[in-house]
Length: 152
Ligand SMILES: CCCCCCCCCC(=O)SCCNC(=O)CCNC(=O)[C@H](O)C(C)(C)COP(=O)(O)OP(=O)(O)OC[C@H]1O[C@@H](n2cnc3c(N)ncnc32)[C@H](O)[C@@H]1OP(=O)(O)O
Image (cartoon, rainbow, N blue to C red; front, side):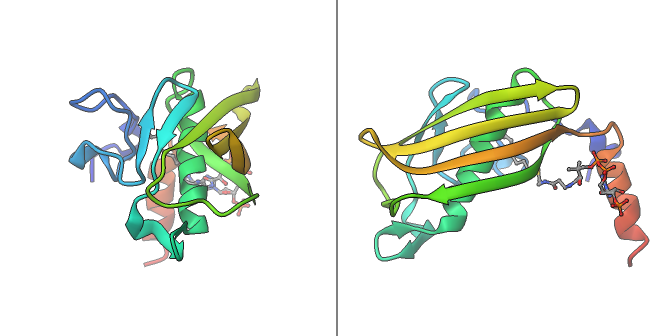
């Protein structure tokens, strides 16, 4: 745990990838996301995220959206958290097939962001998502740790 948890921010890894705190040490995205640019992502659902036969777990799809929706705003604001995330599951998402996810910023004012994304296979939409992001307060993680300590 760093001395100042609020110093945490996403920076390019050794290989130039933008990775979350859980994947940075391995220098690979365990969800199977590869950025094409800030708003387009090549994604493959790893087989171990299978929910039904040959089909992605819905939690994997939501996690991918959470990641890319934050990535879409990250170049403008590196200190974001997700306030809400809504996913519409339109068709089953196959594992181990090349998917495209596109994301965009719909609105930004002050600390509030609304963003949306779409996951598709060969041009057919499989799922869509909308999220509210918020620029975190300067003491976000310190406040969380203090709150947690008070509940031990
Ligand atoms: C390559 C990598 C790309 C990116 C990777 C990461 C992608 C993933 C991004 C995420 O998923 S972030 C993790 C999921 N999201 C969160 O954990 C956010 C949790 N929610 C909050 O921290 C706050 O509710 C939120 C920042 C959304 C709003 O807080 P605000 O301070 O702006 O509003 P408000 O003041 O109304 O606070 C709402 C309540 O939360 C409390 N709160 C806010 N921040 C807190 C904090 N930091 N610690 C403890 N409590 C906190 C606050 O005290 C208050 O409690 P009460 O209703 O009891 O009064």
